[in-house]
Structures are given as C-alpha cells and as structure tokens.
Amino acid sequence: MRLKTSEDHRQIGELSRSLGVTTRTLRLYEQMGLIGPPQRTEGGIRYYTKDDIRRIKFVLKLKELGLSLRQMQELAEIYHETKMPDRIMPRLIELLDSHTDAIHRRIGKLSSLARDISEYRKRIVDFYAIPR
Amino acid sequence: MRLKTSEDHRQIGELSRSLGVTTRTLRLYEQMGLIGPPQRTEGGIRYYTKDDIRRIKFVLKLKELGLSLRQMQELAEIYHETKMPDRIMPRLIELLDSHTDAIHRRIGKLSSLARDISEYRKRIVDFYAIPR
DNA sequence: TCCGTACTTTACCTCAACGTCAATGTTAAT
DNA sequence: ATTAACATTGACGTTGAGGTAAAGTACGGA
Image (cartoon, rainbow over all chains, first blue to last red; front, top):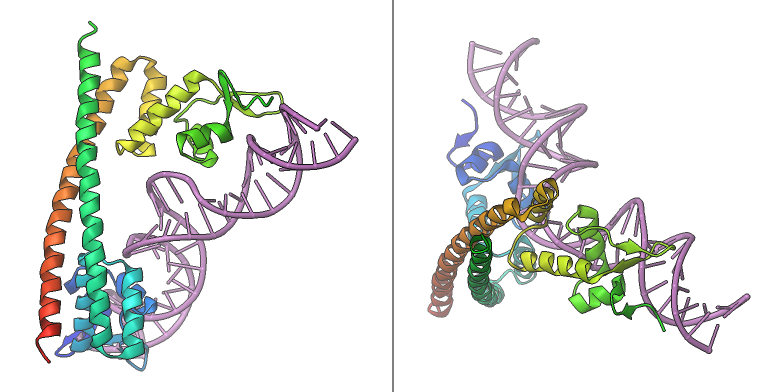
C-alpha cells in the first residue's frame, strides 16, 4: 500500500486535492514562508503532518477572509520573530479590521457605480428608442 | 505662445493632465484602437481636436462604469464594422447589464465576507482576551 | 526489477492596466 | 542657435495568485 494517506502523513497531491487547491499553491506558500517546510522522505518527497495541515488550513482561512499573501507573509514574519501569538493576534485583528473597512468602501463604490450604470443605461435606451 | 492649449488643438501632456490620466494611457488607448489616432504635426506630435477629446471622454466614462478595455475594444470593432450606433448601442447595453449583475454579485460576496470577518475577529478577540 | 504514477525543481506564462525608463526628436521662445 | 519643456517609440517592470511545461527522480505494486 502506498504511503499516500496514512494516518499522519499525507503527500502533496492527495492533500492538495482534499483542500481544494493545487500542488503549485502549496509549494508556493511554502516558498513564500506562509507555511513551514514539511518533512521529506530520503528521496525528497514532502510529507505533511496534522500540524502542517492545520497551519495550511489556517492560511487558507485567512485567504478566504481576504488577506493577501503579502499580508500573511507579514504575519508569518512577526510570528517567527516573537514566536508568541501575543504579538500576532493584535496585528491579525488590525489587518482584519482594515480589510473590513476596505470592503465596506468597496461596496459603497460598487453601489454607486451600479446606480450610475442604470442611469446611463436609461439615457441610452431613451435616446435609442425615441428618435424613430 | 505655445500651441499647447489653443482653441481646438491640445497636445497630449496638457490633455492628459486635464483629464486626470497619464500620457501613457492615451497612447495605450490609441494603440488598442479605443480612440482613433489624432492628427500629428510634421514632427509627429499628436494634436487632439474637440472631437477626439469627446471620444476620449466617452471611453473614460465607460471605463468609470466598469467596462474593461477589452470590452471597449470589442465595441470599437463593432463600431468600425457597422459605423452605425444601431448595432453598438444594444451591445453596450448588454455589457452594462451584465456588468451590473457582476457588481451585485460582487457586493453580495463582499457583504458575506465582511460578516465572516467580524465573526472570526470576535472569536479571536474572545480567545485572546479570556485565557488570562 | 520494471512500470506507471506521483513527485521534484526550475523557469517562463497569464491577465489588466498601466508605470517607468531610455534614448532621441520637436517645439517655442529667447 | 540654444535651451527648456515637451513629445516620440519601444521595451521592460509591476501587482496577485498562481498555471503550465519540461526534465528528471522516487516510490509502491506486480
């Protein structure tokens, strides 16, 4: 039997499939330092432990919440410097807050944009319909 | 006196400034066929007429409404094929409509995202605040 | 031991809409 | 004629988040 999905060690292909990302993504995150490098076999094949996987899921969650990879890199740096979540959590909250603000601003813009468009559309339709 | 802002002929720098875009943008739009090539002096310097400028403003308006350059290219092609706005207006309306839909979808996503974030934030704050 | 599949790294490609040089040419005014 | 300010084209860079291909290696089952 393959080592593929034994209790605590999953290799990249299977893991990526189960997480809904590509292997490229996992390697990229590793390369960017968002996740720590996992253990390897003699031959160099990555094997991810439960902890690794939790870490990855955390990163994916943050991404889903709209943090950019760059921001997560920043968090990872703080994390490595202090090793304590005491420092990282305030920063994370800060990032989430500013992101929320940005979202609300964006929503505002899009709303007014939608209004503009419908107005513009109306003018076009009127102009296009009446002249005949 | 410079020819820069004489009645009907404005050169690219002054025009771009007054429109709030860069010269690069105007040249790009021309290169992409979104706006027709303006007259040039003997030496090759672009001089924009009022008509040119109206056209540019139209393009910028559409852009403001969220049309991509690619979509405007498409419109320009239709326009060149038929030379009649009879064809172009329905297509423009179509594009505006689909764009409006996209905006509303995007707003929906962002709204739920904002909710997710605030929930997540709360969990973090709770977890961070209580344990001591 | 061989095969097929999964894995490895490296490196270039994608999209959008420009930004930013660089090297050179044109214009208008003095 | 010189100079300052502007213009020209072309090419490469940027941002974000990976995609894709190539060429080679590792592993597990038969």
